[in-house]
Figure 1 (tube, one colour):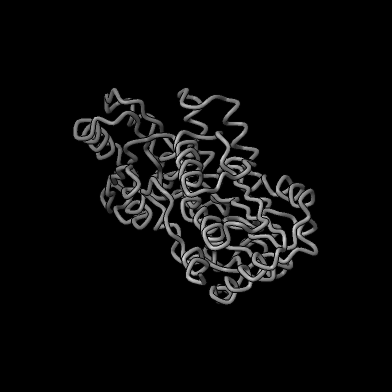
Figure 2 (figure 1 turned 60 degrees about the vertical axis):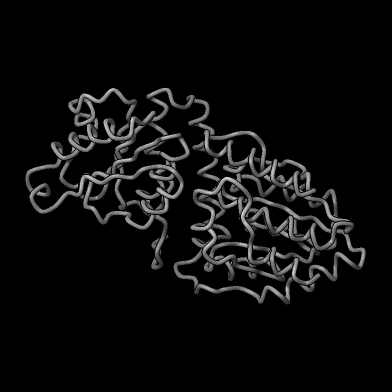
Length: 354
């Protein structure tokens, strides 16, 4: 599909993947402004992001010398365990040999070269461009690389079928009013109706989406609700650490969810969640994170409350029959760098009803 709305960048996807692999310092080989916002956000998450700050002169004569200099600086200044050099459009257009620069810099820190640019329509190309050299370096197994390949393909498929990539352009929306949806959710829980609350979130966004399940439990602790979460122990290092922290945080707050899928399996997890919904046959369901992963045939006849952090996801969710669609605004910046569950707007509104 030829999109006419902004789509995630493959360069940014490469940076996030480097973080998930335990990279301490990522070096963007390009102009200083490339991916500036996300570089700043990732520094909030503990990964230093440097730039070779290429300018007009390097566009003509090449940027290997600045890259070697920044590599040596990063090693001396930060003593990192791992580094990654991430390409940009400029580096790729002028034909920079990143691997050669890493070798010639003489750094001892394990460092991978990520040959990527923003000229891909799908951001998963940036993920794979990072995972492949990581596998070559022995940072992950070949089996894990193939697992990630399958998961990325499934996530992409879901976005094309029912997500923000299902049309050329989707009007952004803030969704339904949270206090009205919260009132209805509590009324159902109080009435004795049976419910399922499902966390199917993408990686660190689960730090906030988990709070919506906690908000329902706090408001209706005795309701007939089954809690399910994609917090199984699989994936890249940071993904597994995040899942463990969120599991512990939920249990401390009185919710011990059934575990179904891992935090990087959000795109592939829909049918398994759907089968669990069929087994439980609830009157209502709260689906948070990536609710559109669940095929609509599994939610027929269920009053669905879905919570996303994507304003362009609202219309597609309504199209597949979700009655209440809520958006957690600015969720992603609020979950970078955190190590414990973060209060959500919808969770707060649910609690306020009591």
